[in-house]
Image (cartoon, one colour):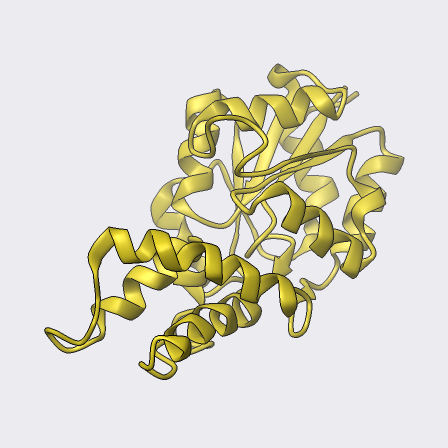
Amino acid sequence: MRTVIFDLDGTLADTSADLIDAANACFRALGHGALLDPAADALTAFHGGRAMLRLGFSRLAPGGGQGGEAEVDREYLRLLAFYEQGIARRTTLYPGVIAAVKALNAAGFATGICTNKPERLAAMLLDRLGVRGLFASLVGADTLPVRKPDPAPYRASVERAGGALSRSMLVGDTETDRRTAAAAGVPVALVTFGPEGRGVARHAPEVLLDHFDDLPALAEAVLGAA
């Protein structure tokens, strides 16, 4: 079966505001105030909780309380707790997601998700957004001992969706997704409606996706006829 696997944050949904709110809650609890901007730092949000914490701590003056990776690790668990509290407060699906996934399924494609968000939180978010049932598989950062860009989570997401690696593709938004696809030996489409816009072309994906309306035809072109 032809299979399309999606990243979640920055690909299916704009989660950046809720992610940055969670990071800023950590910084406020440490007495630093809000160190990240929901608009300017959206790209960093899509690289994960630790990336946001590192960026925020880097903005403190020398001696301002940053503690390197040890403090990042400590605050990461608190960030996840804050994020869970407001997981879908400001998150929205990108335009056309639901129609595109339904069109893929109707055309005989299997669909699944491979994300570096913890699996429990990813499932919670998909439930809140009302789209969990659209996807036959969900592999998160902690589903396996490794995470993207290691190809194992991608392979697992394809297999659990009932597909074959040789007839699959990844839809993502960052260099991590480009590297994951390369490691798995599959094509990748990078979306251009995130913070980088068409700047994601610098990662040399097989194709660019400008709008989800274009995805069914794009998947047919990349993966061929059934």
